[in-house]
Length: 504
Image 1 (cartoon, rainbow, N blue to C red):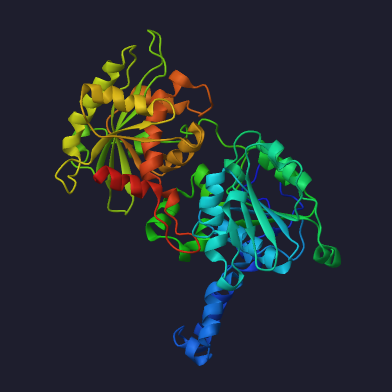
Image 2: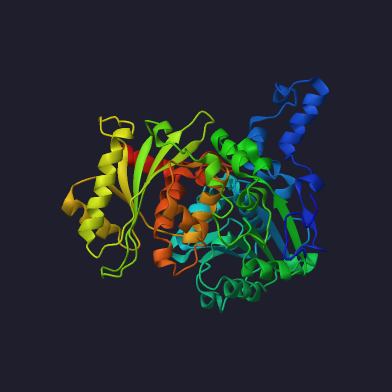
């Protein structure tokens, strides 16, 4: 894999001259895998070698807990760097690598003062600290930090410390100084992400006795899925002591669920898939996210030939915020989700019932009418009721949607608060559609026309009503991006939990 593979800006590589660690250059296997391969080469088997090597129970416990035996070469920072930038696809073990780097730095230096940066406080705790590959999960029992949650601080037995801050307000970083920073998923940082990154650079200035003795500068570890943003240009342009590591999701299949692997293989060759799963950074992607979808290739032209039963029916509502005569459209799109023989969930667009009306009761009746028309095609739940519901985003009108609909008729309504932009929701959905997993049942001219010009930019309003209603439930309930196991084992995803709620 070349240093500039898949990274383009009008034909000019952003990576020229930057050292790059890949599976090709440094090998794909961790130390445990190397041992197993050597044993297999010698004896034709990988069984019984723990006994033959006479590992004690204590040594086996050490092997289990010490991440240095489980990290692939691409997940280990080099001996000397100023910035180690691990840019990989989803599920490559980036969080595991970042958490391990923090633990190793704390263990090596009692004077270490470490800063942990993530998109939000909750994301830091959920992923970088307590996640399946987080610091608290993979820390060995003999070097486990004390957690001072009220002070947002970790304190290790040797005196090393770490604090955490979300990448929301650059001013919050002022007045601090650190020896080591772990910045996770800058692709998801909101607000002025460039200002936050620059402030991280300013506060990353403290040195310790060990660092001065070994000639080590204050260092930063960045772990992220790439994105063609101004922030990434800034980070890649800061070249002093920069070492890049690149990895694809396929390099970590041992820790991923089989259904997730099937999904990755299906979408990895789409432009968005190459970024999301192959770790490629391109700045020449089409801003119209669905323009590359060939709807005719996956279309079921004759609705009579569509499936007669679906695992779930979802009536997705994107209500307009205004109630005046000239208000935006109310997006109402009906989707059927069905697990097919290829082991993947396929989405069937059954109806576009979007309309413009100043009367909330009118669109509520239309949503209920659509639900009643399609719920006979939904599988029955354990209680004998069809697995069908109305969905709406809760940020702008979720509770209003519930109350408005239930003044007309009591039906099941589920909501979700948006933690991402329209474009972030649409990007993986467009990959799913480009892979042929989303089927238009019949023709939906107005929806398809809106999707063709959809960019997800803020202020879309009437332009985005149908498109956002279309993308939301696919993103939330179908895209399996949260189903990867992580280095420490399978974690139940949000979309699984919501499906369970719908089936209750």
